Length: 115
Image 1 (cartoon, rainbow, N blue to C red):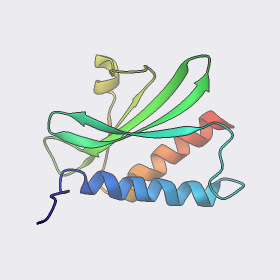
Image 2: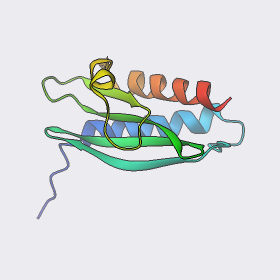
Image 3: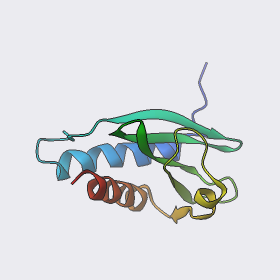
Image 4: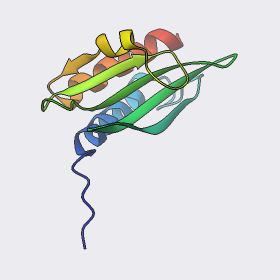
């Protein structure tokens, strides 16, 4: 018996790249002064991951990424709410052709916020 992971395969590749880049660009091999958490992301046909950066005081920012529902491209949404994305956040989605490009954009944004 096999478990089909094709829905999240591309998102998993992005996540692997994010973790690899964070190990390379942070001073102490992946340590960040602000905690990140990882959750699943699901919106209809989009299945992937959500990385949340906790900023204190109940505030957080999130990057949600998956294979886009209507293409083979990777979509990354950036949100500041605790739960659902706003319509504007959905419209401002970023699209990438490779897991490396998506991961680089996510890690770059994390680094900007954590400085």
